[in-house]
Amino acid sequence: MKIFYPLIIMLLMAFGAQSQTRPGSSRIPEDRMVKFYPNPAITQISFDFKAYSKNYSFQIFNFIGKKVYELSSVTSAKTTVDLSDYFRGVYIFQLKDQNGKIIEAGKFQVSK
Figure 1: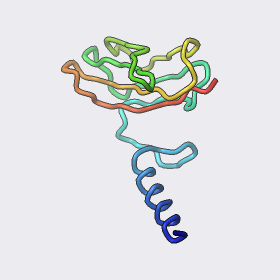
Figure 2: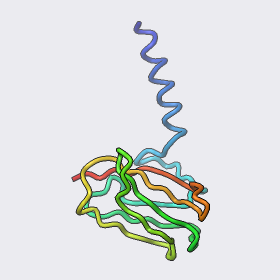
Figure 3: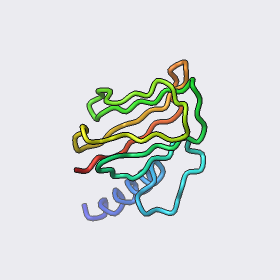
């Protein structure tokens, strides 16, 4: 049984490192269309859009899938969301094109 623990840990680290960038990591994905900071956030979170268009919409969902924020058309390179009404937890964001296709999605954490 002791043999399986290192194997499981190595597999989890391998798959986890590919799916997201950890805080403090030097790996910065250059192809991302949305940059967000700080993560975890307390009072507000900022989103920078690499390419923006009136045809793009931006939405934030809580972890159970309820939409808590929507920007129907992304018209500027940056938006800041006030988190005073948000509960502590994980939130998911989506950037969609005019056809509803998800261009980019990600998650962030609210810590209060």
